[in-house]
View: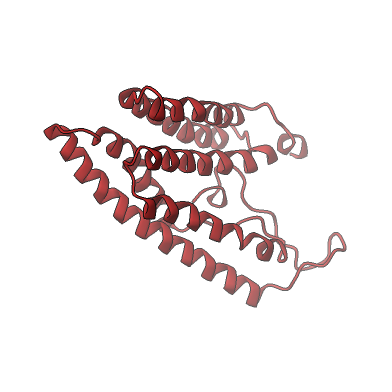
Length: 214
């Protein structure tokens, strides 16, 4: 099992690396030739790879410590790059460009408190998964909505519905997560430096487990 956790070259990790490699291509498509159709297609490919890496990890037991870090980093960078690209194109307003990364920055400030109790992450609430799904629909719809046609107007309206609802859920999930951290700090003793001492929880955040997303 230890050897399994130490693996680097696994299919899920390769899919996460593929998502990271496609991010500069996506940003170039959005800001350079403004090939929105290709950019939307790339978002679909990245979304499918995100689903597949979790499925493969669970189905074939290809969990790894590298994956615990790589997968959520790829998820966060995908959202960040999409937000920056749409913001620079004036498709997404400044307040939304700031609001989404600010939520992730807020959660990063909680990591030292988790580690003080021996945790890497906490199980993700269903609300966080729903928020992320809504936002992943937002980006392609707003891209397709950047035009004067009737179809573009419909995509833009639906995209904004997902954007507003998704952002509200995204922040609400973040506040629920912060409340979980607060409860943990009150109920779980601080982890001592000595290995094997009582009060050290099992690590969480494996790829495909609840702690790896949201």
